[in-house]
Structure formats: C-alpha cells, structure tokens
Length: 470
Image 1 (cartoon, rainbow, N blue to C red):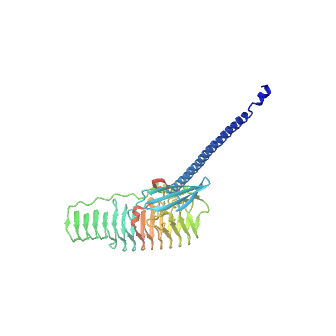
Image 2 (image 1 turned 90 degrees about the horizontal axis):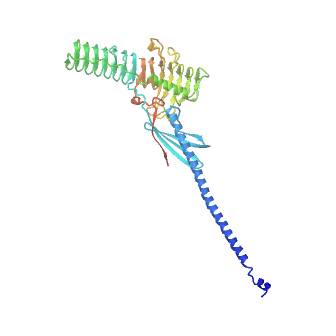
Image 3 (image 1 turned 180 degrees about the horizontal axis):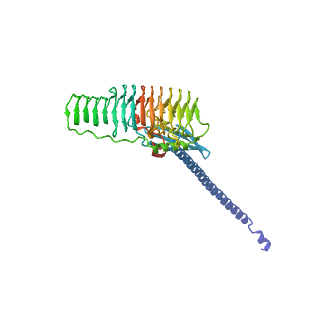
C-alpha cells in the first residue's frame, strides 16, 4: 500500500466531533454562569428591597417617635396641644391624636412612608397640681364681709375676719395667730370658728378662742380662756371665768383653751407664678399695638407675653391656648369672654397681670358688666386670674383685682394684693393678701378646686408608658 492510499484511510470526522463537544461545554458553562448570575441578582435584588423596606421602616418609626416627642414637649411646656394635628419629616407626615383620659392624656403618633406604617403610643399623667383647700384664703390683711355678702364654703385667714349687715360664711371660719373673728351679731358662721378672739358672732357649730368669746351665740360648744355675755347651746369649756352667759349643757372650769392657729402659706408660690410667666414668654411676645385692645371676633391667644395693658371688650371671645402674661393691667368688660380651648379637658391655666418694674400701681385686674371667664367646658377646668400687684401688702390703697356687676369667673389670686368683690359677682375661689366683699358678692367653693390640675410647670406631666403598637 502506498502513502496516498494510506492517507485516504485517515478518519477526518474526529476533529469535528471534538469541536462540537467543546462548544457544548462552553454553552453549558455560559448557561450555568448566567443562571448563577440570575440567582445572585435575585438575592441581591431581594436584599436591596429588604434594606430599602428596613430603611423606610426605620424612617417611619423615627417619624412616629418625633410625633410623640413633639406632643410631649407641648404638654410638658404648657404649650397648646390640639386634639389632632400632623408634623412632617422625610417628606412624609405623621398623624398625632391626643385623647383626654382620667388624670392625663393618651397620645398616638401614626406615620406612613410609602405605605410603611409605624404607630407609637404614650400615656402621660398630670403631675401634682394646686390644691385650693378653702373657698377663701387670705393673708395678714384679713377679710371684711358686709351687706349680705356670702362665702359658700370655708375660710382660712392669717388676719382678722370681720362681718356685718347679715354677712355669712356657710362653712368653717379660721383666723390664725393673734387674729380675731368679729361681727355685729348679724354675722353668721354656719360651721365652726376658731380664732385668738371671738366677738359678736353667731356660730351654728362650736367656737374656740385662745382668749375670749363675748356677746356671741354658739350652736354647740364653746372653748375659751374666758366667756362673757354669750348664749351656748351645749357645753362651755373655760380656764378663768364665765359671766353673763347661758349654757344649755355642762360647764367645765379650769379647761385649757386652744392655742392660736398657725399662719398658712398660699397654694401658689411666687416661684410658680414666675414659671408660668416664663412659659408664656417662651410662646412669643406682643409689643405692638399697645395698649392691646381686642373688641370683637374670636381670637386664639397663648402662650404669650403682652408687653403692655390688655383690654378685652364688647363681644370679643378669647380662646386660650396657653398661659398669658400681661406686663401691665388686664381689663375685661361688656359681654367679653375668656375661655380655655376644649383640648385642655379637665386641666386649667392662668392669665397673669404682673408688671415687675411697677407692682405698686400696675398689674391690676378689672372685670365688669357681664363678662365671663370659663374653663374648657370639662368638669374641674378653670382659669386662674393672678395679679402681681403688691400695694395692699406694702400699705397702699390700690385694688389688685376688682370684679363687679354680674361677672362670672373662676379663681382670683392676689398673693400680695387686695381683692374687692361687689354687686352680683359669683366666683369659685379667692386667695389674696386682703379681701373685701360687699353688696351681695358671693364666693361659691367647688370641691374640684381641692385638686386643680394646671398645664405647665406647676402641674407637669409624667410619662407612664411609651411603646410601639401593631
């Protein structure tokens, strides 16, 4: 066989088969790589989506937290806290809802970022508020009642209590230290009395004096060092003498008389008033126009400091949304109204007239005609009208607060000044250095005043719980 014949017998198909096999391997590797890339891409995409959702969820959570913090800041600082509002962050909103509950508030903040929802709730309780234990509490300036004026409730005075012309106190009357309770025999105290001296008073229950009881009518027992010219329904307890008196029960000579009552401080301190003033000023300052006169329409006001006299008159209605500090005199007249925003619920707030640079003749409050000073509409909600005038305490004659005619108001407070009530005023509670009532003026104590809760520093809020809910 020659070489040509041998070459013709070579199998030329093998390289072709090898190439096809190699191509199959390449395609397999390619498809496997593509499949692996697809799988990796899918996981990566899912990871990105999960990270994106997690990022949105965290943002939504922080937005909801911001809503709770905003509401708590408003509550703690005594600022206006509406029943519902929204705040914006991350180009999204959180809806804040505030619900009044017993003794506090429940706050919900519901955020939504691209349909990623987070809801946080918190409950806050009102801190210890101000306790007005008496219908009337006065300092060393004492109390004068005349011309059928009446206090419906009990009285504690660091000074003298004097009543005449059918004046009446329906509860107990206490005069501290060396102070006396005196009248003209038409002065009626329907509860118990206790003082350093008691003279010409009709007492429905028991009377107690450190020194003497004289020319008085006592409905139950009498306790004193000496008793004279008095009518006592039951027993008489005395140390030294009893003369010219009738006793329906037994007499107990040699009995030690009660000691003088201690002077009691007022329920609101000067420091607390300063705190309220600071909260008001932090809300903004009004400096023009001055004097500031509001004579019609409904105006939302507070927290705010007004750097001059404020007058509310005619049919104007002031909707308070925070404490108001008037650095001057405050006047209301005609049919004007001052009331708390309904969002206060059972809480209370203050309007303060206090010109620090001139407390002798400024910082006075005057209300007349048929003005109304109202709470939020909920039980236990009041507005306290506070005067910084100190004329009475320093021997002056200026009147710190003077309501007259048919004024209807809540709490009057003049720690260093004189409050003078006349005509048909009907108040809830009065605290003053000195108090004069005349011409059928009436103070009617409400039991809710014993635990009055003020927004802001005096009645601050405590956080009870704070958590995320489904």
